Length: 151
Image (cartoon, rainbow, N blue to C red; front, top):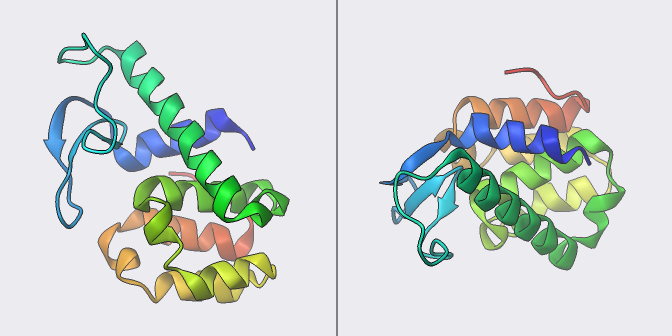
């Protein structure tokens, strides 16, 4: 998987913040950088706000590595998918967290069977789809077609 492309996708989808903010999840969580959950993973000792671009990149790299590890642990088949669909799953996992992603039982089962139209339909038939706007539209399209739409 192209990690540079995934990083760019996440920066676009999550936004980049140098100072903490309450995200829109339920319940809201203090977040900084590129969707970095401060409750789950506080900043390293000595870091102060505003974060530097290097600090944000470091946090993002760690968060991406953790996301991929969670996917490898819970959905080992995901690495056998093509690059675009790996990006879709990684993006969703980064956004939702592994526990909420695992709640997409029908979509994940369809993905594992390479039934991508069904997987996309199941993704659309979710609360998540209505909450994340263009991101969900783009990810569903990519899941169905195998082509990642730009912007």
